[in-house]
Amino acid sequence: MRTADVARHELIGLDVTVGGHAGRVVDETKHTLLVDTASGSKRIPKAGRSFDFRVGDRHVTVDGDEIMFQPEDRTKKVRS
Image (cartoon, rainbow, N blue to C red; front, side, top):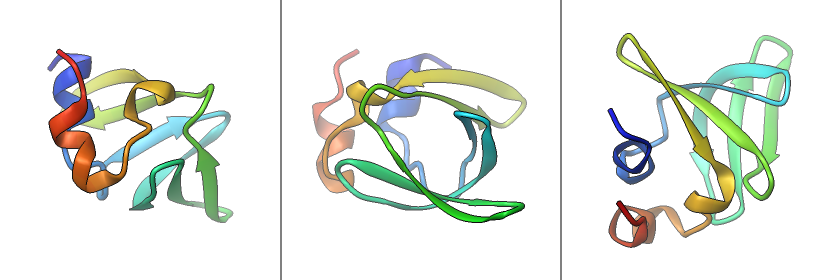
């Protein structure tokens, strides 16, 4: 799966690793992802971060700056 494919995908429910935190995405805003981790929920800014999403048996890294859209708009605006 390509990075653009993941960026267009629904992110809520995906497993993610970012900045030393690993967990499952439970909410998304234009500027942040809310991730449930073993130590509680963490609101992580998208800007300047690199997110490693697990989709099936694959890991795909996405630059947070590329997904800084409102969730409902992100699927239409991310470039291939």
